[in-house]
Length: 357
Ligand code: SF4
Image 1: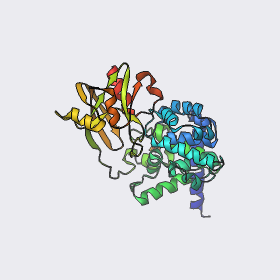
Image 2 (image 1 turned 180 degrees about the vertical axis):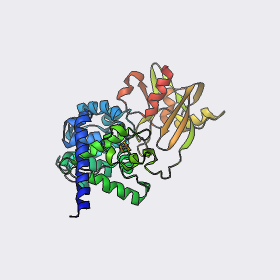
Image 3 (image 1 turned 120 degrees about the vertical axis):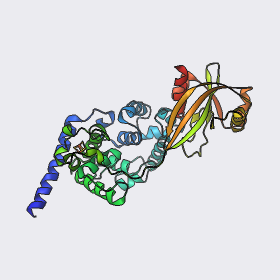
C-alpha cells in the first residue's frame, strides 16, 4: 500500500472513531434507542420518515404501549392504528405499517434479515431499510436522508447537486466510508444527529462538530453554500373555505374516500375550493348533500400539504336537517372531547384550536 493510501485509510478510521466517540457522549436518550429489537426500531424509523424526533417521541411511546409487538399490531383494527397515529400526519405510513405487520405475521412472524427483504415491505424505502438493517442487523449500509445528505455534501464541499446522479453517488460513497465496521447503525445515527442538531441548514455550529477537522466546506469558510441547490418543485398556493358545523357539543366530520391519494379514510371538516362570494351554500350542498346555511367567518389558518400551501377561511355553518348529509360522503358527529382517538386530518385540530382561542 502506498504511503498516501495508508494515510487516507488512517484518516478515515479516525473519522469513524471520532463520530462514534461523539455519539457515545452526546446522543439523546430516545425511547427507541433503548432496544435493538426490530419491532420498535422499525416503528420509530417509519414515524421519523416525515416527523421530527421530539414530535415523534410521545407518539412512539403511546403506540408501543397500545401495540407492544408485531402480532398486536397485526391483529389490531386499522381504525385503532390510525387513531393512535392521529396528529402525526402522513397517514399512509400508519396504513402501510399495519399492512406490513400483517404480512410479517402471515409469513410466520420473523422479521427481514437483509436490506433487500426490508425493502419488500410496504412503507419501507431505501433510507428506512438501511437505517433499520444497520441498527438491528449491523449491516454496513448508509441511511441517507436530508440531514445526512447535507452533512456529507459539506464534508466533501460537493459541487454537484445531490439530486443529480453523480452528486448522489459521491454522497453515498462517502457516507458508506464513514460507517464503522462493528457499529454501522450507531455511525448512521451519529451522522443523522449531527445533521439535525449541529450541521443545520443555516448557521451550522462547526466549532462543536466532531467532523470539523476533515470538513472541506468548513475549511473554506462557507458551509452554507452546500449542498448545491437543485431545482425545487414550485409550491402551489390555493384558497379553501372550511365549514365548522356544531350541534350539542359535537362537530360534523366527513370521511375521505378510501382510494384518496392522500389521507385516505381520515375524517375531515367539510370544505370547498376557493372563497366564492356567492354560491358557497350550493357548493357545500352539492359536495356533501343536504341544505347548508353558511354563517360568519371565524378566522383564517394556513395549512401546508406536501407542495401545496392552503390559505383557509374558516366559517360556521348549519344544516337544515342533520340526516340529509347522509346522501353525500360518509358523515359522522363526534364529541370534541372524543376526537383525540379518532383518525382525523391535521387540519381538524388546527381549525378547532383556532375556534377555542
Ligand atoms: S464542520 Fe460544520 S459544515 Fe462541516 S459537517 Fe460539521 S457542522 Fe457541517
